[in-house]
Image (cartoon, rainbow, N blue to C red):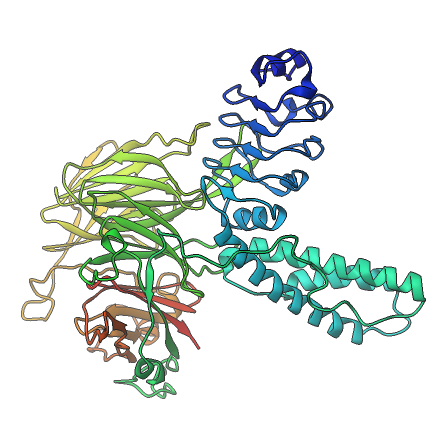
Length: 595
C-alpha cells in the first residue's frame, strides 16, 4: 500500500461524501500502512472525524500533527507501535484499542492514562482503574522531585550559571528520584523528567518577572490533574493476596542454625530476610477458597541492562502463569490455558528487528506442563506468540541455553530430552521452532542444567534414577544420543538410590552470593553457605554441611485461619539476592525481601 489519497479516504469513510470535511468515521484497517503513509496534510482535512480504525497495519509511530482534534474513538490494534506519547494530540479521545502491539508495555498503559484524561475504555476495558494508580504515582513523584529541587538549589553558589545548573538538575532528578516497582521505571522516569522540566520552566518565568529567586512551586503545582480520577477498582483477573499474620511479621526474619551469624568459620554473615507478600494468584476460577492448587516452578526475568538485577519473577501452577513484581507484590501479567497444568517456566531475551530495521529487545517466557506443549509468551504485550508440540507426554522441566538465547531444552515423562531452536519471531510475531537433538534417558528427567564451564557442549540432568550427562555439541553427526556419563552415589550414603530433583553448579558464576536454597515440608526455607566448598581443593571429600539459616514459615492467614505448614516445592532468588520467592503446594507464593 502506498501513500493515502483523498479518493481512498472518501471510499472508506462514513457517511459517504465527496468532501473530506464531512466524514465522521474512517476505516483504514488491513491496508499494510506504514507510518510514513499517514500524511498529516491530507488527514488534517478530516475536520469532523470522530472514529478512526488503523488496526492490522505496520505502524511503528503516529505522526505528531494529524490535526484530528475531534477524534473520540481510535483503533490501532495489531501494529508495531513502540510509543504512545503522540496520542496526546487527541484530547477528546474516549475509546482506544492497542491490543497486539508487542512492543508496548504496562508503562505505556500508564502513559496513556496520564495523557488522555477523558479516556473511558482501553482495549475494551474500563480505564478508571488505571487513573487512580497514575494519580498516586504522580502525586508522590511530584513531591519527591520538588524536594530534590529544593535540596539541589540550596547547594548552588551565587557564581554558578543558572542555565547550566538547571540542566544539571533535570539530569540529576532523572538519575536519583526513584519510586514504585522496577517494572514501572520507564513511566516514573518519564514523569520525573517532565516534572523537572516544568519546575525549571516555572523558575525561569519567576526570575524574568521578579529578577529574584522565589520558592519553587508547591508539590501539587507541577501537574494539576486534568480530570477527576475514579477510585481504584481491582480488575477481575487480579488474584487476591494473603497478608501475613501479625505474629509472622513480628517474628525474627531468619533463624540461624548450624553456623554463627558472624561467620567465624569463614562463612558469610547471615543474610537478613523478611516476609513481604503472600499471594494466591493461581487460584482456580480466582477463588479465595483455593488452597489446593500446587505451584511448581518460578524464574526471575533477565535484567535488561548489564550489571542490573531483576525483581520480576514468573511463577507457574495449575492452569496459570503469573508474572509478579516482588517489591510491590503486584501481579503484572497473568496467562491462563484452560485444561493445562503448568510445571515449568524459563526466560530468554531476544533481539528482534522490525520491518523498519529498528532493533527491539524482547523478554520471552516459555511455559510447559501436562499437555506436552511449550507456550512462548510475550509477557509485556500479554499474548502467546508461539506453541511447540514438543512431547506426547507431560513436560517436567525446561531451560534455555546460556550460550544460545534461542536454544531451548525440554524434558518429558516420555524419558526424552529435546533441544529446540525457537528462532526469532517473523513479521507476524510468530515463532517457527526446529528440533536439533534428541537425548534418551533411562528414567524420567526432572531437572536440567547446562554444564557451567561448557554450556554449549554438555548438559546435566537430574532424573528419577540418578544424574546423567550428555554431549550436546551440534557439530557432531548423531542427532539422537544416549547418556554419556552417569553419576553413581556411594552405597550406603543418604543419596544412594534416590531421585535427583534439584540441580545447580556450585561455583561463583552460578550460585548467587555463595548460597544454596531449598524448601521443606514444613514451609521453611533452608539456606546453605557453600563459599567454603568453593575454596576447597578438588577431589577432597566434603563434610555434611549444616544450614547457615532456616527461614521459618511465617504462618499467614487464609480463610480465617492460620496456614501452619505447607510443602515448599521450589525456591529461587534473584541475582543480587534482594528477593527470594518460594512456591508451595497450597497455592501460596511467598516472597521474602532482604532487609
